[in-house]
Image (spheres, rainbow, N blue to C red):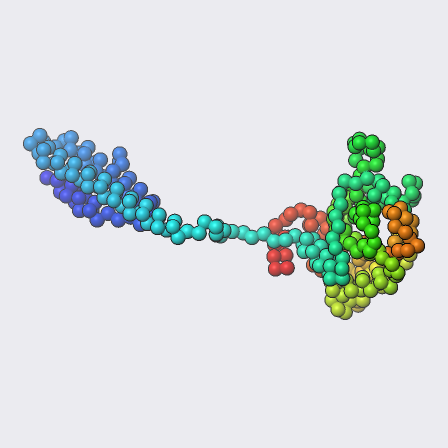
Length: 347
């Protein structure tokens, strides 16, 4: 009786069934108990068994199915118990692994380093709104309404009525000097602040320019502040940021809100001052503008210019980042290309 032999063979197999996990157990259930399983196939053959053998073979088939169901049920309980024990030891506060870690943006790295350097000599951080009014961006900084210096910065104006202001009175700040005017009108000297933030100018986007960028400006106001104080503060910053051998030079310049004014160059840290393509063979690289706060600005902000004096400076964070990391295209800073950002993981 071939059917009887097949039943006994499966009975032996079912008694030895093993499964290490839920996937293996499900595979066993499908193999033996599914509609196309081996036990179901034997029940289909049972239909052709002679009547005098059906009693015996029917009992064996039922025994086989019950044993298979019992064995699979026992294995399921064992696996569930093992999973429960494993879950009891699982620390649900752990971060899933593997996980791809991000990194800080290079502009954030440089911005924090600038702030850290100046904080060592007493500067604190002050912030202000990016959507500003003409008064704080230009008016209080010695920009007359028709002053040609306004053409130096192509401004984004907001074409919307806000309160009693005219549409042209509301704009995206073109420099963080607006934060300085807010600080000077709300605090009494001595004042020693850094004003980091994003600024906007209507410029064509290219490898060397963008319609938005980042600045860090500084302001120090107290009694008897001199241009020598300004020079020493900037020399200290340059050596801390670019190395102890860094040299600086100050060239006369013009800004409406400072007098006298200067542009500051540092010795090129790429070629060591010998001349290269980055410094255009001069050995010097311009990094910021600075000067003594114009008395008119102090008076406009309610500070007695006969009693107090001060200096101010401003630098582009992208410019400093280019010098530190030699990034040739400014557009890379705002494109969020993971391949570019991953280069700064170790910084």
